[in-house]
Amino acid sequence: MTDADDEFDATPDDLAERLGAIDDDAAERRAATLRLGLEDYALEDEDRLLLEAGDIEDAESGAGAALPVLAIVGRPNVGKSALVNRILGRRAAVVEDVPGVTRDRVTYRAEWEGREFTLVDTGGWEPDASGLDAAVAAQAEIAIDLADAVLFVVDSIVGATSTDEQVVRMLRASKKPVRLVANKVDGERQEAYIGELWGLGLGEPWPTSAVHGRGVADLLDEVMRILPTESAVAKPEERGPRRVALVGRPNVGKSSLLNKSAREERVVVSDTAGTTRDPVDEQIEIAGTVWRFVDTAGIRRRTHLSQGADFYASLRTQAALERAEVAVVLFDVTEPISEADIRIVDMVLESGRALVLAFNKWDLLDDDRRRYLEREIEQELAHVAWAPRVNISARTGRHLEKLVPALEAALDGWDTRIPTGKFNAFIAELTAAHPHPVRGGKQPRILFGTQAGSRPPTFVLFTTGFLDPGYRRFVQRRLREVYGFVGTPIVVNMRVRERRQRS
Image (cartoon, rainbow, N blue to C red; front, side):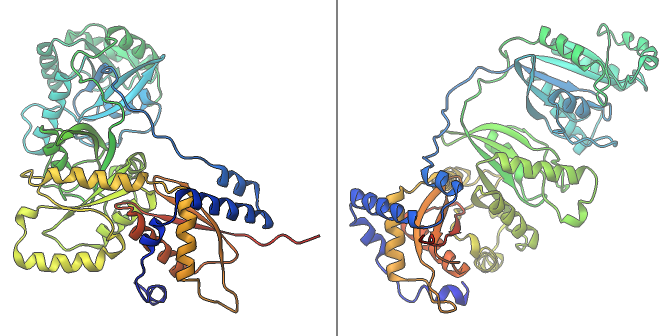
């Protein structure tokens, strides 16, 4: 708390008690009177629209049919992710001209000619792989098992390899409909190279160029022919699960948390930092509540992100955060809270998402480190003291169930709306007890206030002058004291308006 904030907090008051004594009808009448008083000030059309804005309705939730699933497999660096991007019509999958960029099963919602389906990008499959490569290959094999149809991508320039032949044997054993995609056929001259691919025994190769889009439309027409209208393997999708982004530095346990919550090896986990590159989302159930968790790439220092796959993965992490409703920022309790950790928290605040702080690897914490950690939290995370905090172990599953009440509390705060009458009663009581200080011989007044929106709660104050930043922080603190707003940033904006000139 700064010195500027201190002058507004000389003594505690019973603001909440006084507000509770105000009748709702009386509060609405007072707000209506204040609203009429605003007509004496120069308002813009945008101001009037803001004052007339109604509550935001929640999206309805329900159950939907399971979309058919199409998996794209092949050995490394044959253009699987480029084909995914071409089908989606946007750069969703990370693409780089080195093998092994994609590592997890990454799902996307796709559409062709009015039909929706789930598209699954996979890491490159290689025989006799070990370590991280073995885990990547396993994810590709799981993707085949959980698909209704498969596109097997080969490099038409390189031709069929022994690895391709082993993939074919695996695909035949799966008994799934398979179409052979001869990628990198950029023109008629390259089509001469695909003749030998008939030898793989998967029927006619479909010549395509994922980079240029050549042949992809014909391929998708064929895909629509072999895909069922409803998946025989996927679970029906629950409409409306709250979307949770798992964010943090590399190797803090985001993927482990997703796997433990999903009760399966959903994403590749390795001690190597930066294993996850693409956002991976999964519908999971914890303590009877369904959530959609999104595992994201670890965010590194900006100086390391000037180019390459990690840079684009970072951009996709930010995009995943924008699509989420609440972010769980994971910290590794065995390491000091770093500048990178604080920057990630600030990124969540800038995005306006609800926030939960999860301190992972709690089972590895000793007493000495715990004392230092509490001091670090008090000093480094004071600006988000309102965020729910949970101590977990993603590796063992310890206290994962405590995520549910923390997430629910944060989302409740994020969704909260205060009726205009009550908000103006709050402002009136607040300014009566603690008026804005006189600055330069003038004392700004708050004429009227309204909640412009939720998610996050955003308030607009119509004032006669500029409010000190310290006074706005004071208003935010008192809003939390009276109305809670657990786990959510609060935005307080000003609109300085001058009294109309009398003619």
